[in-house]
Image (tube, rainbow, N blue to C red):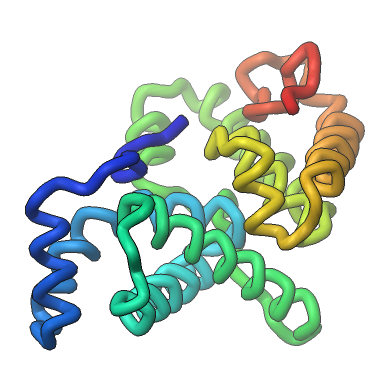
Length: 213
């Protein structure tokens, strides 16, 4: 599970930053944002599939967390709290975009991110072409999922979240969250069947012999 900020306890620096923010020091919130922005952007990008929407969802998540900070009781770490807010913001944004037929978001995997650029520099032209094709096929397959299925799949197989957290983010019972994961995996396996002949084009979560629950 990605844990770069998802810890069970807060250190003294974060506790002090929260105390200062609640006392009226807005600048102290920057400490929390700088620490947790990478993990928040990662999950918003994976759920929305768009760098534009990822930034919007992340900004909304931090704004909501800021406004609700006086209610924060530190029963969980701030990172875990804002991460879950970001999941909800991402899902809500995806649902809004789906209702807006005029919205054309830039596909996250359709462009070259920093990681892809770094990898591509070491690839042969033929391998780079296969890599581009794999990215296109994976993103096209993800777009076939409903917002709930995409979110459930991302949280389970890319973020390695437990079903209880996924169910809470989706606002459904655990069994319904499990079914959303099952449907997503089934759809993706069907759509990405041609890619199975090339392991280099595999997608995380699809090659699992058995579905995790």
